Image 1 (cartoon, rainbow, N blue to C red):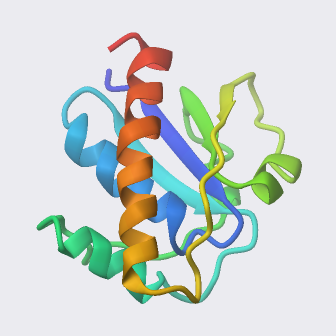
Image 2 (image 1 turned 135 degrees about the horizontal axis):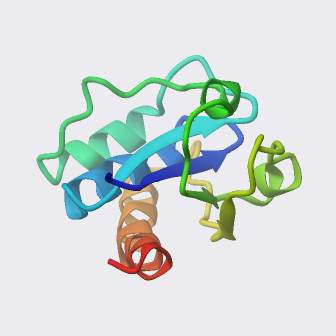
Length: 135
């Protein structure tokens, strides 16, 4: 069965969404990524959408989700991508391995900042998932 990675941040509107798309693209068939927030925002940041679309990646199905949705699901790895989410990360019903890998929050900054964060996620988070899951 394909392992599931939950990528967690506060608003689930930027970093975790980009990480979800990048993991699902780069590790297709080897890992399944989902993302959520401890306090989800109303929508995914336009800059995050634009940064993903610039690579030709699909963004139609992205929307902020509350972490509570995933508490009853089988999750093999949790990655927190902001310090706030690490502090308020919920307790899962069964022990789940977790990694804290913080990324800069580009909200309110130009598209170049979103692209830099996207590239940083691809350079650091995707290899961390591969290593953690032994892929």
